[in-house]
Image (cartoon, rainbow, N blue to C red; front, side, top):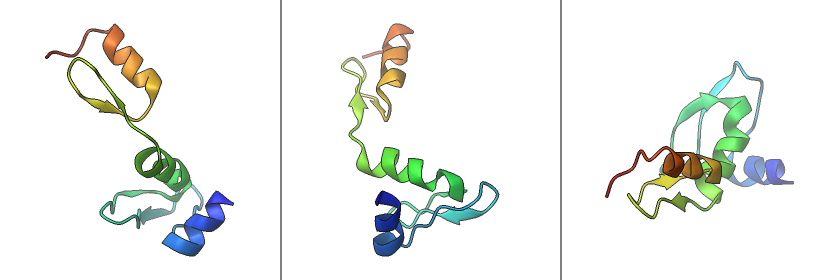
Length: 76
């Protein structure tokens, strides 16, 4: 269903890993393998961002935020 929506409303069609295309989401235009389009749209355009409470850096995945905080790589 989500893939149908991407195709019908945004012109985004997944393909094999060797075919490259630009993300057609408004304001994006990132070039990537078509096999990664689904994850890109889901993670970059539809998912909430996780923000570090120390340095205010944003992360797409919660486990990356947790690793960032655990490694003490952020500064105020």
